[in-house]
Amino acid sequence: MPSPPYREPRQERSRRTFEALLDAAGVLLGEVGIERISTNLICERANVTPPAFYRYFDDKYAIVQALAERMMGRQNAAFEAWAKRYRDCGLEVLSDKILELMQAMAVITGGQPGAMWIMRALRAVPSLAPLRLYSHNYVADALTDIYLRYLPQVPRPLLRRRVRMGVEMAYSIDEMLKEEDVDEAQLLEDAHFVLKAMFHYPEYTAGPGSTTADEPPAS
Image (cartoon, rainbow, N blue to C red; front, side, top):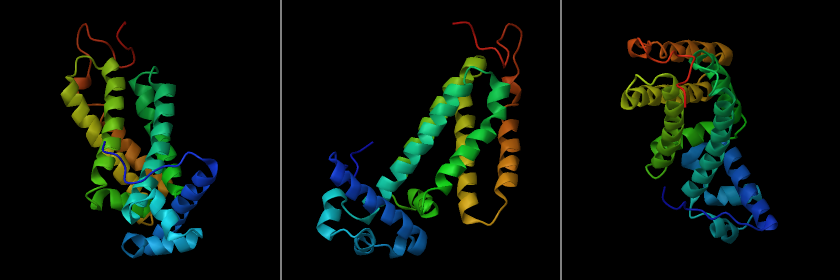
């Protein structure tokens, strides 16, 4: 990943200013969207001078990137905790617990002001697209490593392609929750049904001498 277009301070006082700017930008994104938000609006809302803003951020897209990285950092932490909790429990448990993971992601984005606009920016702003892809690929690679323990007969590129597809679907479902008036619990249940079905490709059935889906190979 290239160096970000913002500079995180280390001193406590400066960090408070940095976080105040991030919080103000998130709220403003929710109010006016990415097209109308400006550095002046952010400074006014955070009660910070423009020179102070540019000490930390190159432009408004830099602060959107910082917001996105903060949100995705929280998502990655939740994913890592989920993976640590269930990676040794077998594929059946892992597939059942995908709903728990999607619920955790929905809580994180739901608690982030301006989350809908942050997610839109990650797709629409060329400079932010690598950040989205990096995060999605990180999750896909980690899940592939976990699933491969239980599916050693499946070629990794094949497994990884399908996992990557599922990861993209899960993130899209989270975006749908923010953009449309839908029943969150029902939508996540529907998505969980689809993602669980992706554990039943014919190649995933253990053959003679293969490891079963709930037993990792002996190390």
